[in-house]
Image (tube, rainbow, N blue to C red; front, side, top):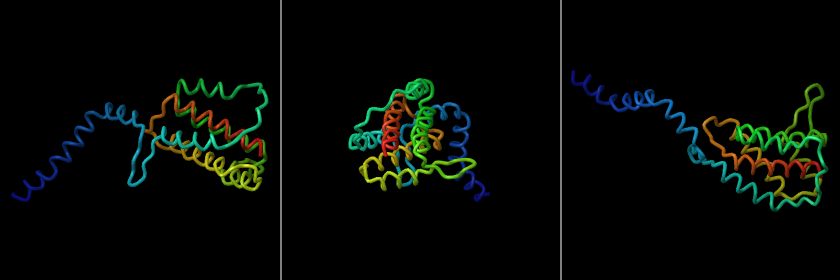
Length: 178
């Protein structure tokens, strides 16, 4: 009987926590949706901090070219998407970089062409025209896009999405100029 009481005492707190989590699951989801920083083990990531790092890299990436006028202003469309869903805007902004790579012929496969970030980076390095910062910028943007895509409880603000969009557009220009 004493062993049974000890087991009940040991399970009381975990059972209470699980029960409270179940009772307040809707509120917990809302709370988790507000996360702006994620930490797992020794890895910690905040979307805003990643943007600051990417913006520093972008300032060191010179672009002497004014982009030609486009029929459809993709950036304006992405800004509108950011008003409704900042996460969707970040994911969609990455396509600016992929589309630039496709236009430059940096694809593999004939039936279903695919863009690999490794090919983009190798192309920029081999051209010799671009600084290591431009390559680091594209890597940073990819990492941030991955966090936005694969971390469902990770929150991104509209401002952060708009800043990401400008950096993705600048990176696409870098690829087009190579």
